[in-house]
Image (cartoon, rainbow, N blue to C red):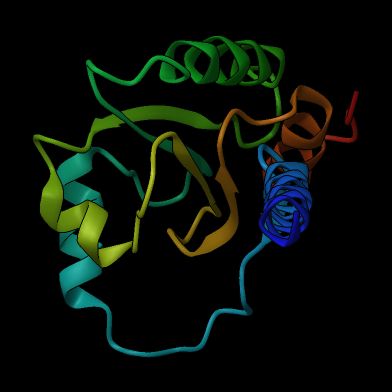
Length: 151
């Protein structure tokens, strides 16, 4: 009887932890304020991935074996297309984590899908774990592109 009680408590605790972890999935999180440090290695890796100076960038890591990555492609492509006429239209870059492990390691990518919003200087402004929520992504991109549109 005690074992059943302990099992019930463990199951309830596990369910609670699971709900807390999943609650933040797909939400856009502000990255820590950029500290000016030499990032020549990071800059070179970002440049090799296709990041262009002067353009805000949506950089999303994916892999052939990643199921949710297809949803990220759709959400990002829609948001980027909506802002194509902005003062500084965003660049959409998809990076295969298996082909670019050095960049993934440099940006501390721990799971897929992971999406970064980089400002025009290449600094990380937002990070999204999981499939981005479209309204949050549009709002964050509008801030980076100088567009007044957010929805």
